[in-house]
Image (cartoon, rainbow, N blue to C red):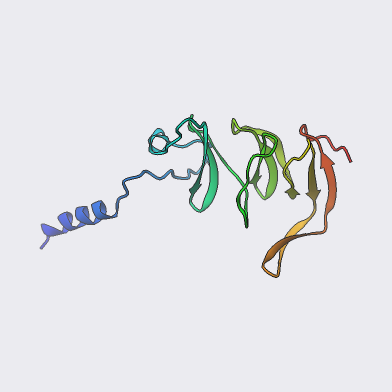
Length: 151
């Protein structure tokens, strides 16, 4: 019986293993994924893909860099005027298609850029009302793509 136990454990491990590698979060929250995971993705002619990792959406560049994007009822954030939004430590900021932060996460909420302007809020909170997320309170301003307050 004792000699069958290691065989049983080995078979159990093999039956639970996955054929597609899954990127793992590390303690230092690196912004890249393994080459093995990159090779398992089909980029085709694209440089960026969006994928779900541990229940969150990330943009992944074919060079291995990743950036988490915010997600709402209509899915993961899309690029608008070359920028998409991310949430880090509860604050929203913006990143470009090279997955570089262009506007630091300073805002409690921020709308996507439109005609070079984003409406941002500091001090507002999200709350659910009749199944829909709403914003409550805070101070609203408009910023340009450099983060300069314009109104």
